[in-house]
Length: 90
Image (cartoon, rainbow, N blue to C red; front, side, top):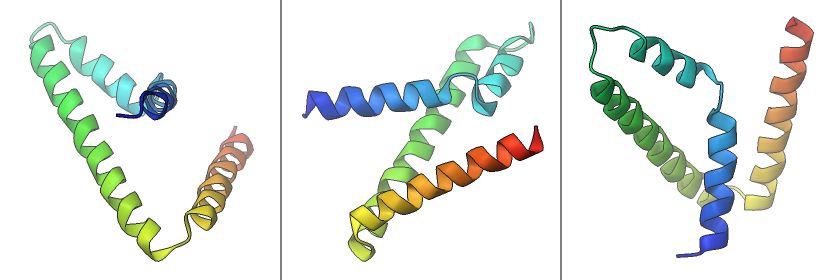
């Protein structure tokens, strides 16, 4: 296992997930006194693992069809577009 890659992906995803809609939804579910926090944790964890698996599979498939360098440009442009859209809506 490439530990540098592991920690790079871990830190990127961890920072990206902090304070996003998913974490807020999980917080709201866990704030209900009548639900099991273990169940909320397990369900949220499984959902994140599944969405990550879909991302890995999609990335693997797309990288076989599109040059990975071009894919990086497309992803970067997408993030910039989302950032600009967010700023314009604010």
